[in-house]
Length: 434
Ligand SMILES: Nc1ncnc2c1ncn2[C@@H]1O[C@H](COP(=O)(O)OP(=O)(O)OP(=O)(O)O)[C@@H](O)[C@H]1O
Image (cartoon, rainbow, N blue to C red; front, side):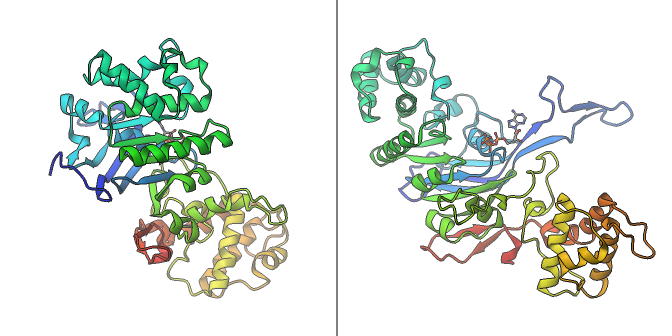
């Protein structure tokens, strides 16, 4: 029911099929094409940045949902779209039963008090000319809360609650350290008594020692005020500190979502595994698997079909229709990756066979295709081919015959997998769980 109060542990926010696309060119007519020969002659440009592309999840009252992923995967865009700071392209955002995506005008304005956001850089989000007391009172004033006296009392009370001295009510932001400024931000967000706070990298700009203190304060405030957080961070140790559940984002999609312990101890998506492997390891004898994430993140304008991680995935599934053993496919897959990234020096066909296939090519049609690709990049052309270093052709051949035929490319994955830690559900968007 609309406006219904939500009990602890029940879904406070339910997101369904949320999309946020940006026009490529943000100019006035960006994204609009005029084609006189067509009807209608004006069309929307297809070249859109699919920053958030069909995302669904829920956040339960009183919990912290961590949102993690590499830079540019759409975390901030998702956070801002939930708050309607950005207009959603499609989907619903149900908050206590009201669809925020459909609200407008006064209704939306009133809802906004219940949902607040804090940003990474407390320096730039605090007006340097205003005293902190006034900064904290500003949202209350905007929402017509309390009178002058009441607001001042509440601002002082909040300063104390976030771990600052109420006597600093008349100070300017520059008199505070980075961590203290983030506390001022927290007090400002709390002033209108919100239920839900989107925290976008709130501690990323702070020293590690200060980070833990601010996180602890946020946890204490969560208890005290019954707050629900969506906590965006790229730093896995911060996510591990604060989250109850964790959602992993890659190129506009949520690829894995599970309880914190389950996600860290039993990760099921190759992207999550690669992220966890890329945490620097303090022990120098164990090499931190820094190369775990190969290659670049593809463009969100034209993301890969099926599973978006497939172009970088070390566990791409063998395409149907070939008769190969697991080992033969593993060899073929690493050869495909090596050709794609051109990570080896060209050598004779015999040497390449030895290096990538232990001398034996797969049987049948797969073997013939592999032989053709080897011939294309080998220093000595095999009989009947044009050989001698045609990397682009070899790459295209392997991609077309193998990668684009894989289920990873043809179907979008979405699976509930078995949970090892706790009882909560574990979602993994990976066809290995078919
Ligand atoms: N206003 C905009 N116009 C066009 N493209 C945008 C806009 N804002 C973000 N993008 C693009 O959307 C994608 C997602 O960006 P977003 O900032 O949400 O990622 P992120 O995961 O929060 O990254 P970071 O951690 O670096 O902030 C990126 O490709 C980005 O370039």
